Image (cartoon, rainbow, N blue to C red):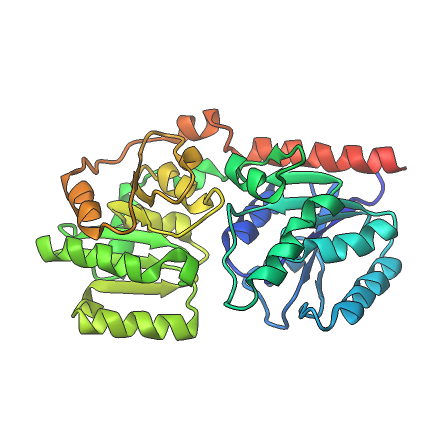
Amino acid sequence: MGHPIRVLCVFSTLNRGGAETMCMNLYRHIDREKVQFDFVKHTPEIGAFEEEIVALGGRVFEAPRYQVYNHLSYCAWWKKHLLQHPEHQIIHGHFFTISAVFFHVAKKLGRITIGHSHASENEHPKGKERIKRILESKVERYSDYCFACGQQAGQWLFPHKQFTVLNNALDTGQYCYNPTVREEVRKEFGMTDDCLVIGTVGNIAPVKNPFGAVDIFEAIHKRNQRARFLWVGGNNSSINESVKKVLSEKKLDDCVIQTGARNDVCRLLQAMDAFILPSFSEGLPVVAIEAQAAGLQCFISDRVTEECDITGRCRFLSIDQPELWADEILSANLSRTDTTQQIIDAGYDIRTTAKWLESFYLNLASNRS
């Protein structure tokens, strides 16, 4: 056959966030002889996924950061890019905050636009809420097709349009509980078998409620001195410094292992006994699906959609009651079970999802030609 069609995926950065991880999972499993991904990022920072993207045959382009005052020059960059790259007929916008801006340019040039919601709400730095919410509210107007990670995320970004839920699927075989790996990871981080390991995965950012996570772990540690907190995710330097200060003040720093961003989350989940996600908001968090795929009991903020409970192993709790989280975790049966078939039956198998998306893209291209 001829050259593959090339879909342009647009992100803010190409680091290990939930949306980026989901897209890369699909990229690894899609038939790249038929469909190739290229990427636009909005930062000069070399993202964690960029080396792999190039190895898989993709290309990475850097757009200027959108600042409102540079609206005209930002649009000019997109016009120039799309005119220079006629192969980019399909624009898949994961950077939904400003998707309306580059979608508007793309549609003027006859390109197909796909808006993708990965959140049920979006928190912005103070003073920018109104402008960014106005931009977000226009995404559906310029989206030819609308995708969302779940019903709640879709209803938030596309309140007046029909949308398709594209599950945050994963490779179930990588996550299935493995006692040998559990022992290896615990040894790596100096945790013995009698330790109660509480874990979470996610960038240390305000929306993830990192100080709430500290309060929850403190409540657990007061009752179980052998408790340890395995904290996996990238660190926002200013926020993380504050987190470290609080941990030190509470004399918990020796009990908390911060790994930073990792490419082996499936492995690190094996070491945990319970998974927590005390976020202020999420779309449909892929980490909750990953944790369930690893057979973990999951304790999740009641501000997160209950759609993520696909195995019956999730409990939703108020972020204002850390003692309640401790009660629930310490009294729960934390034994592991193989949830592979449940994950597949719920529609979260990456091979099935990748095949569907591949066909979707190919149909769009076929109808265009």
